[in-house]
Length: 336
Image (tube, rainbow, N blue to C red; front, side, top):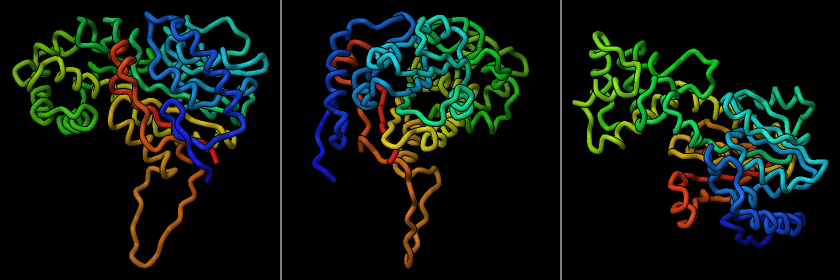
């Protein structure tokens, strides 16, 4: 192993392609103030992602969470005429942000179907992949979508409006034990058991179908800061409605197959559950717990190697400029 060096928070082995990539990164930095659709979503850890992906001008890349196109626009600037970019987003609102560029292919589906749509578009493997798992500012700011506690609106929370499950249907139909489990696991809600019991009791006489109706109905059991409390509850409901943990697992499991040797995957997480999944899979190549045997050792083959042992976090400057970057963690792995 060669001597490692630091590059924008990313520890990685020196490569011949780094000189070309450094020139690309320098050019991209000059455009730092130019972020398209900033009102839709401000991309977090932008330069760190570009450094990590080590973009080749003629490469093929995937943005699994296109959103406002902030990350993708800078990937395109690093690609040459023969480069190609596939972008996934299950939210129908995202399609209006797709640039008129022949190198871009928009896939209006969840990234859990990554391999299927790569094959559909004639691609067996790619040079790099990005997934920013945060909810876009646009989704939070659209009161009618029900993602935010700041607005009155239907308790929807579907990222894909074609889905049938909504936050309201979860509150209305899930058993007390199921509600307890998701509130505790996905939201780390302090009194998850009490809240679940309260929901089941109240829903017998009250429709919990809007953000305001729900907040008012369970206000008596709120613990601590109400804003933080409901943010945790809403996070748990959103994760359940969109099966975010299941989709992430499916994406991670496909990464070793879809990356070319030397290709990189960069994943940005925003809460501990996501980060733990990414950390374990990138490190072990599996989600299975390692069994310890006193008289034998099992060597597992992991087709991935870590580029950064510790997660990359937003700088103090970025956190000040974009508060939503405070909880962001970037992990990067490379196909061996």
